[in-house]
Amino acid sequence: MQTIRVETPSARYDVFVGSGLLRSLAPRIERIAGRLPRRIFVLTSPEIWALWGKALSESFPEPPLALFLPAGEKHKNLVNVEKMARQMIAAGGDRSSLLIAFGGGIVGDVGGFLAAIFMRGIRYVQVPTTFLAQVDSSVGGKTGVNLPEGKNLIGSFHHPLAVFADIGVLGTLPDRELRSGLMESIKAGIIRDRTLVRFMEEHVDDVLRRDPKALEKVIAASVRMKADVVNRDERESGLRMILNFGHTLGHAIEQVTRYKALLHGEAVGWGMIAALHLAKKRGTISSRQGERLESLVYLYGPLPPLKLRPGKLVAASGSDKKNTGGVRRFVLPVGIGDAGVVEDVTPAELESAAAYMLARAAERHA
Ligand SMILES: NC(=O)c1ccc[n+]([C@@H]2O[C@H](COP(=O)([O-])OP(=O)(O)OC[C@H]3O[C@@H](n4cnc5c(N)ncnc54)[C@H](O)[C@@H]3O)[C@@H](O)[C@H]2O)c1
Ligand SMILES: O=C(O)C(=O)C[C@@H](O)[C@H](O)[C@H](O)COP(=O)(O)O
Ligand SMILES: [Zn+2]
Image 1: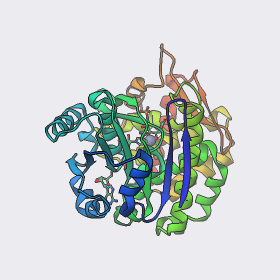
Image 2: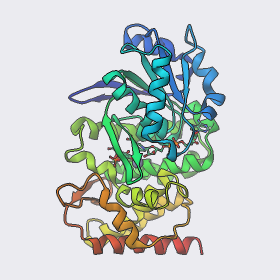
Image 3: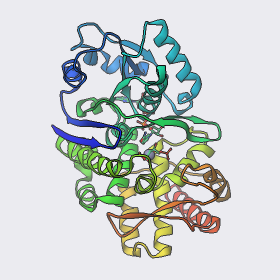
């Protein structure tokens, strides 16, 4: 098992990555919280609960009370947050209650947000069950829900007490979901860890056949990278923006396709292809580096087709939270393993990057 510490001005907690964590959750929470809270809620989806609810409940003296959020991005909204909060009140929840966010990134984001605002804030732990949630969304305290106007436009920073990433639960994860999550690890490597890039290039088969050692390596490296960035810039005033590499157009794709056609990681995968093109044009990476990284994305693909207009994506990217006071921000890789934020990206450049990405998508789905 690997333990990675997150230490920011407002929180200090560990991310545990390994096997067997799910079945020993209660004593682990007890150790961290001092004692087991009287009321424990588990926010999850019916599918995850059916697969893994028994394993999670096993170590608790009394089974925690499950609150169900249906799967899918369209349920990541304020209506469901209110619904869950009311169920918690009805079941006797109070400020001493603990919430376990048990699922993928959607459950984690909604659960974290619910914990942030329920009675002005209660404690929660993350038990991520998708690869994406284990490498990225369960760490760093970003919580929230979507608005029709864009992704994650309502939310707060609220860190968990701990993160328990049990590699065993990935055994039931559909292949497409695994590949989607791997896009966030490719992102992690490109922006800050060239060793991870190399490892992912050299171990494609091991990772895709879910060799536990290979998975643990990629998950721990991704989390280590993210923790280091979050420790230095908890509230995304500068450095943390690099974690948004591939997301400016990625989020725009999700919004324009109404979250129906692509998974989050897949949209980020295409967004990285566009951003790599822009980086090549601006000379922050060489053509060779650009081709190498583009190939890495396709190695862990396939990414779904995209039939969109570049102008529509550029317009949708206007509601990106990195844009403030009329300044449009965009994350570009600098070589392999480093990245920076530029503030002078023009709509024409964005449109050309989007056009490049759409042409690659058409080519690969010809
Ligand atoms: N807060 C952050 O820092 C952060 C970072 C990255 C992504 N996100 C958010 O995360 C969300 C995407 O998360 P995701 O990719 O985990 O998708 P997801 O939460 O939709 O889960 C994917 C699907 O897999 C199923 N599933 C989950 N675990 C399973 C398991 N072990 N076995 C079988 N099926 C399982 C779920 O029921 C769901 O249908 C997006 O909303 C994205 O914006 C947030
Ligand atoms: O933790 C971060 O910071 C990230 O940007 C991680 C992203 O992978 C993630 O998709 C995040 O939810 C995006 O946040 P947003 O602030 O751009 O909505
Ligand atoms: Zn993401």
